[in-house]
Length: 358
Image 1 (cartoon, rainbow, N blue to C red):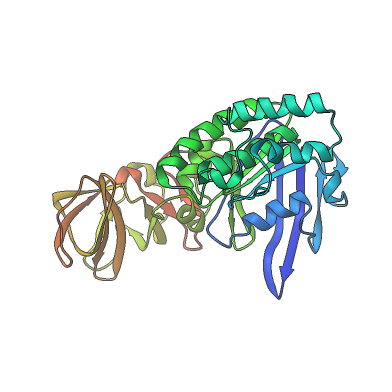
Image 2: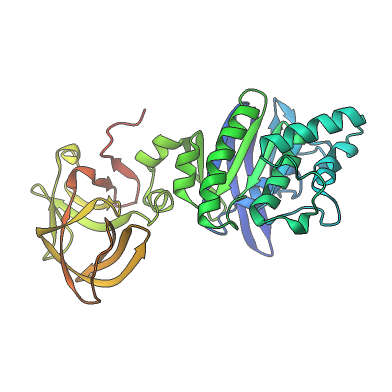
């Protein structure tokens, strides 16, 4: 088990890690989810020994891991940049850390062959790195990490610099590959800014923001039961819509002109101020709805992303299909109230549409 206790790091008076603690079991897949500058890369580098924290400790199977030098840590790391050795062939790139381990030639060749097959690069052994596409270069970096057969594999947004189609393809392949390779002996830590990626990978999710861990748990639980409004924003894309409201007489009163009925699953919400939350796809265009003004319309594949406003109440909606709308158009919006969340005035989760957390 990999355990971090109260890790903190400040650089040039800027906190990069703040009292970070977590537990990671062997055989587990863990996704660190957070926006840019959340502290994800800093945390991975601390695990790898590339950064020394100001305070706190990391242990592995009960032994002190923090004091281990980099070269003694059985860790492999894949970065978001395509970091390879440009003067070496593909096979030589993969062999580089194996030679450092002083493995014999037969073992090195066996691992190269196995790793290249795992990432689909058979026949590329003698190619130079400059001859490869971005996706192929990242496969080389992954193959090098797999061939090393480390106890801990750290993947720092490895797909972020690839185009959308290739990213989708490699994401599916990567999940299958690391699940098969590390299902019992190792620990895989994957960082991303993309909540869909985090949920698709499954396993456990660690939500970070401004150097702090906000929540850790199974991906499904974190998605369905965000502990705070900030977690709800980070675990959704677009971020969850959040409105200040007053709960009174069976209504969530958002403004003088906008109220939503309190749904059955939120019937125990206490009277008074609260925050209601709903996802972008939890609204529909319906003539029976309340009019909202279009502030921005974006086409995303087969969907339309709408930025809408009524008075001071703003929201983002995701609707199926390509809509022909113009700025300042009025659209009638109906809310799927059975999907509403309720948060307290201090932004902690009160009730979820998914019932109690498992």
